[in-house]
Image 1 (cartoon, rainbow, N blue to C red):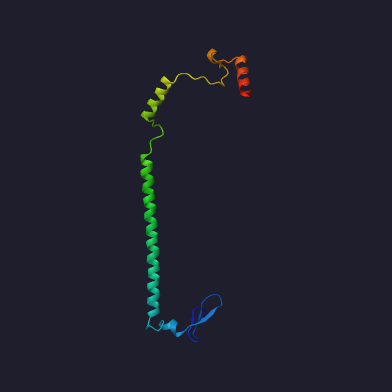
Image 2: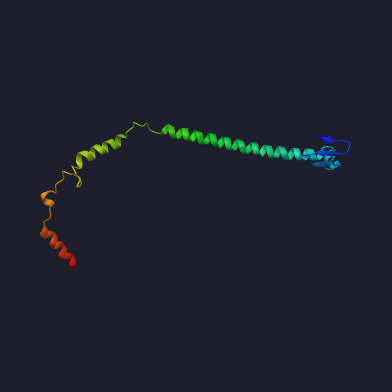
Length: 130
């Protein structure tokens, strides 16, 4: 009972639904035999071509991105690479900057030239009050 029932001109189109076939379904939309089918085929071909073109465009963009990443990773220096200019700058800083003790170190002592006595601090406080 599925398919086309030629005796009644009815077609089963789903679960229990019946649609009556018309002359337009059998012979096309009045443009001659198969006229509507050719038109829908052209539309389907156009849609297929458009979707195919989009898929190819996405594929080419993906390939371009992969190439760009390969190029970028190819230029990346190795983990052990050290820039000679940076090494020279670090060495120069070590040689010319001097020794700076951290004030938070346990063995830090304020040099005699930088020590401030109570009289100096009292004078600063008095100046601030003015």
